[in-house]
Image (cartoon, rainbow, N blue to C red; front, side):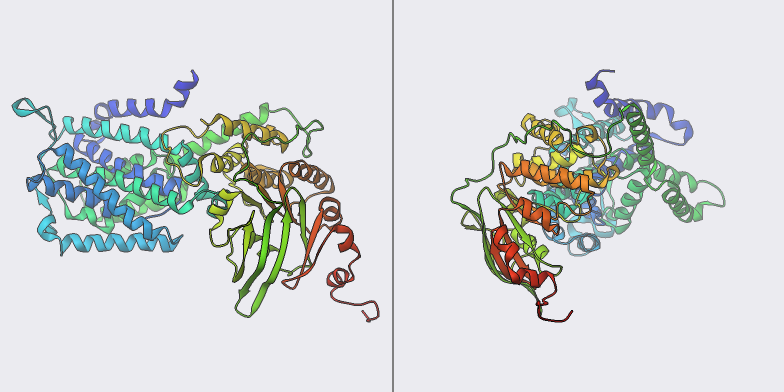
Length: 612
C-alpha cells in the first residue's frame, strides 16, 4: 500500500461502511431511519470528540448548541423568513458558533470540574430560555412542526430530499465530509497543540502557545458541528423537538462517545449505533420494554469497566501496542545512556526571537513574592548579562524556584518587575513571555508523556514558527520543513534520534531530562532558564548533561538553578546567591566561593566560634 493510501485508509474504510451499512444492517434491526439518526448523532459527536477526546474538555452543555442550530434553522424556515433550507442550515450553524464563542470565552477561564459545571449551567439556561421566554419562537414544549426538507435544484424541477434513502444519503455525505475535516484538524498543528493541552496544559503555555485561545477555538468548532447536526435534525424528521436542548441530550452524547472510544473520531458514531439500536430494540421485547433504561445503564457500566478506552479506543490501543512491539524487536541494541561521541554541534535553523540589543539580557528589579506573611522572595535585584551562564544557588527554601517562576511570569511578583533586554515582561503571562524569547526547563519533568519524543519537540518548535495562535487546521503538523529540520537537529544533539518515535513515558529518566531541556530549547529562546537540570541523574548522565549545557551556551544566555555546587562553579560565569528569600551575594564564582556569608548560609548560619 502506498503512503497516501495508507494515510487515507480510515476515510476509505468509513466510505465503504457508509455504502454497505443500509444493505447489510437492516436484517439486524437497523432501519434506514435508525441509520439516519445514528449519522445525525455521529455528526454531533465528531465535534464533541475534538473537544473532549482530543483536548480533554468535558462539556455537559453541548445540547445548547445542538438546540440553537436546530431551532434557529427551523424557525427561519417555518416562519418564512428564509426560503432556502441550505441557507437556514448555514445560519443555524453559525448561530451555534456565535453562542459558543460567548460561552467558551467564560468557560475556558476555569479548568476541570469548574469548566464542566459552567457548560452545564449554560445548557440548563438555554433549556429554560427555549421553554419559557422564547417559547413564541421555539414552540416551547411543543417544539416546531412542519420543518421543510432540503431540495436540490430550482423551481418545479427541484428534487426534495425526503425521509428514507434520500435523507440517509445526505446525512452520510455530510458526516463523511465532517469526518474528513475533523481528522484533518486532529492531524494539523492545531490538533497537535490541542492534544498537548490535554496532556499537560501548563507546559503548553510555557512553550508559547495561547492555551485559552486554542480552547475557545475547539469549543467553537465543536459547537459548529453540533449546530449543523441540530439544523439537519428538524428537516430529517420534519419536526424540531424541544428535548434537543435538554441535559439528557448532552448526557447521551457523552455516554455514546465514551462507549465508542473518545479521541478516535469514529468512536461517537460507533457508540451512537450501539446505543440507539439497543434503545429501539429493547423496547420491542415483551416483558423488558419498560426496563429498557435500566438495561442500557447496565450495558454502559459493563462497557466502561470492561473496555475503559471504549470499543474503538481499545482496538486502536491494541494495534499501537503491536506496532510498538514489532518496532522494538526490529530496533538495534544501543547503550542505555550517553550522548554519541560525535554529537553534532548545536545549530538551530530558526533565528532567535526579538532583537537582542544591550548587554543585559534579563534583569530582576526589586522582585518580591509574598504569600500572606510568608516572603518567599523579598526585594531581589540582579542582572544577567547576554551570552553568559548565570547561576542561582542557595539552600533549600531560599526562594529559587519561586524566583524562576517569576522570571517566566508563571507567578506574578507582589512587587518589582522582570525586564527582558530592558523591556518589562512581568504580568504578560508565560505564553507571551515565551514568545518574547524566554524558555524554561522544569525541576520536575513536564513532558507530554503519551506523545512521542518527536511530537514533544515538534510542539515546542511550532510555538516559535507559528506564534501564540494560528488556525492552520487543514495542513499536516509535520508540513513545516524548517520545524522538521530543527527537530532532527535537536534529536541528534540530545542523543534521542533512536527514541524519536517512542512515547515519552517509556524513556529512561536521564533521557527524559534531556528531552525536558530540549523542549525548552526548541522554542529558540534568547534566555534559557534551567531549573536543576542535573537533578536525579547518575554521574555519567551528569557529565553528558554538562556537555549539553556547554553546547547550548554557545548561542544562548543561560540561567541555571542547581544544587550540585561543583557543577555550578564549573559552568557559571556569574552566580547569584539567595538566602531566606533575599539576595545574599551576586558575584563571580571565585568571589562567591570565598564569601563567608555564603558558607554560613549553607552551614545553617553557624560561625566558626559557635558550638555545633
